[in-house]
Image (spheres, one colour):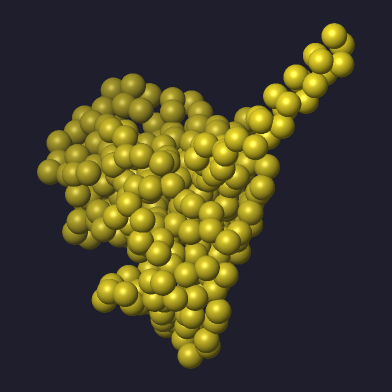
Length: 299
C-alpha cells in the first residue's frame, strides 16, 4: 500500500514537471527605470507626461528590448523609420538598426547584436542596452527585480556636470525639501522651464519669502511677490550651479500674477508651466528629506 502511494506521488510529480509553462510563468514582467525611477506601464490621469510605457520591455536572447518610443520620447533620441530601417540620432551620433537583422551600426562601427529588432503587437522593439550605451548611458540589469535601470550620464551645463536637482517647497516658516539624484529629471525640468518662459521683465522692487500678514501696516499696500517654489540644479550633493525661483503676487496690484527668476533675470510664465513641473516631479515619487540641509551656489 505504501509503495503504491509513493508510486502515485512520483507519477504525479513527473506529470506536473512535464506540463508546459504558461506565458506568465515563462516570461516574468520586466520593469524599466531611468536613474532608479521606474517608468509607469500605463498613462494615468495624474501622469500626462511622456514618461510612461505603451508596452512592457521584453526579454529575447538574454537581451532586454523596449518599444522604440522609449528611445525617442523618454531618452530624447531623434528616431526616423523607413521600414525595415530604424535610424536614431542623438547629438552628433547616429545609430542604425534593421528589423530582422542582428547587424547594427554605431556611427561607422559595425556591431552584431545578440538578437534582431522586431515588431510585435504593433510596436517596434529595439535592444535597450545597445541604444543606451551608444548614448553613453550605463545599463544595469537587476535580476532579482526583473528590472533594467538606465543611468543617464551627467548633463553638462556651463561646463558643469549637473548630477540632479533639489525641489524646495517654501511653506510658512519652513521649507519642504526633495532631492532628485538624476541628471535625466534635472534636464527635463530645465527643458520644461525654458518652454514655459514668457517675456523678460524688470525685477520687482519687493520680493522675498515673507507672507503679507508678516508686514507692518504701513507697508501692506505695496506690491510684493512671495517665493513659493525653488528648483536647484546640482553639481554635487551640496553645491548648485543655478536656480529657478517661482514667485506669486502676495499683495498689491500688477499685471503679472506670478514671475520666475533665473540667474537674476525675471520672466513671466505661460499658464501651465508650474502644473507641468509638478506633474513631472510627481512621477519621481521622491521622498521628503528629514532635517535641514544647506545648499551653496557655485556661481
